[in-house]
Image (cartoon, rainbow, N blue to C red; front, side):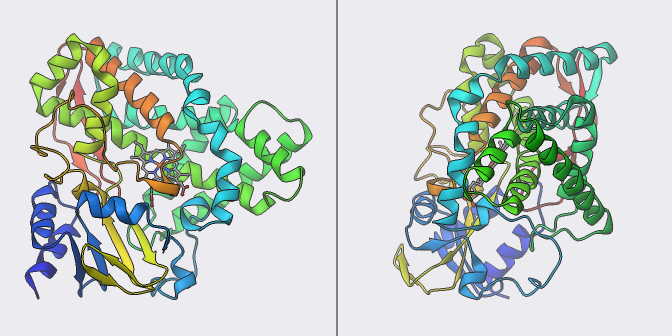
Amino acid sequence: MTELGELVGQLMQASEDPYPTYDRIREHSRVCWVPDLGRWLVTGHREVLAVLNHGRVSVDRRRYGTAPDDDNGGYRPGGLPFVDPPDHTRLRSLVQDSFSPKTVARLRPEVQRLTDELLTRAAERGEMDLIADFAGPLPAIVLAGLLGIPARDQAMFRSWAMTIIETIDPVSHRVVSEDGHQARTDLTAYLTEVVAARRRRPEDDLISRMVRAEESGQRLTAAELLEMCLLLAIVGLETTTNLIGNGMSALLAHPAQLRRLREDPALVRGAVEELLRYDAPVQLAGRVAAEDIELAGQALRQGQVIGLVLGAANRDPLAFPLPDRLDIARGPANHVGFGRGIHFCLGAATARLEGAVAITALVTRFPDLRQSGAVKRRQNVHVRGFESLPLALN
Ligand code: HEM
């Protein structure tokens, strides 16, 4: 096996610390063809941006005949991240407003209230598992509220969504277990009922707005509406959980930075951006070349798959001086933790709000906050985060 092959092998093992391996691959070549994977790997910041903003790359591998070998059945999330314009433009325009920074800012009091409620409960015990007791539930309750899932059903909604997420294979993006299929069937049936209820009596929530779009002239099919709800449940939860989990883990490992934020909570916006750069919850994105293109002197052929290592781009020394240093006041954020271009994360404003409220509350409310036991990492090279992160609060 080539040196590059070995490095990529290491990468695929969802290591504790993939960043030294990213560095070695980037030093080898910022855009390299990896025969063992049969795809390009892009690790340079400038080059990742060039692909994300390129007009002639696609997210639809089936269109170019390079879908994975296992692409022959079973459920895989569809919708926005997997379609090109013009379908992408149409679908995105229907939900864009509901996730705009202005709309999302209105959620702040509710996010603050939920945060305080969850942390008060934990404070009474003096300890918590950051993921199970706080970073997991918070985004699920917020998203359920946005969609218009009634409070009494939110625990069930989260449990189905988590089962689906946990059983998605990181390579094929397919649900691979019976539990996952059952959860998807149950969640689909449940969402179908909510959609029917909103059709009868619309409310001021995202599902009602999508129903109106569907009824007002074929801009959204009934199947697409359901797919969008499922997609949001799948991509909007674990990512935000991991922003809070990875972010707090990084701050706890850098006590001077933690102290700085505690003393000056106004730094939190920049801190969230730096944490997204330093340990991005989404490490990889994928594209396929829609025609022959040139990138950093390399010739990419139509149909070839391009793996974008967002986590490596975020540590590129050409873009970020001393990239391995956590500096919550680093300044203007140019990270690619939310991607870029037309597929830029739809939920970025929501995640930023939740991250800022959650992290501020944790660092200001608990001056003696510390890790109290062994952490457990998720075994996933794509979505990076913790399964468990025990904390002592008092
Ligand atoms: C810290 C949390 C989050 C991170 C790090 C994150 C990261 C990303 C990234 C990197 C992409 C681009 C993928 C690509 O270009 O292939 C993306 C797209 C997307 N994200 Fe997020 N995300 C987060 C939270 C959310 C939330 C809360 C939601 C919704 C409630 C959401 C919904 C989406 C959707 C729908 C897309 C596809 C957009 C499109 O294709 O037009 N994300 N996200």
